Length: 95
Image 1 (cartoon, rainbow, N blue to C red):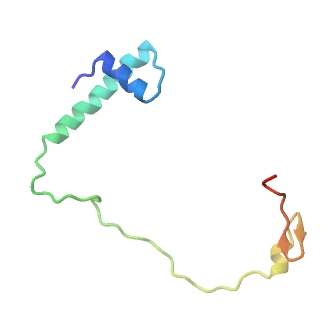
Image 2 (cartoon, rainbow, N blue to C red):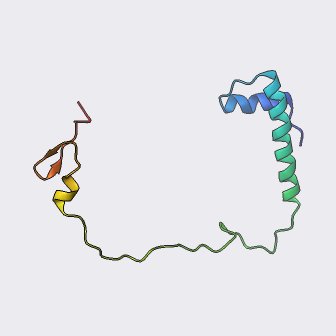
Image 3 (tube, rainbow, N blue to C red):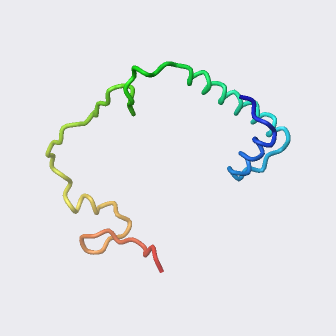
């Protein structure tokens, strides 16, 4: 499906793109090629294929939770640039 110059300009307008003449020509060819590929895909018989959102089975890779000792509070605060009591002191973000 060959896109006309006006269609490419309309697509550029919808995408809020300022296109030069060279870009209109190049994008017209590229978008036309994409649409031609979709026309080829539409010819494939998919009547015996169930609709699916995923073509391969999904598998989550997770790590088992293990209880490990955490650092002591004094070790955590040792490298803090500013601290107040047992807390990190940070600059106010909002005024």
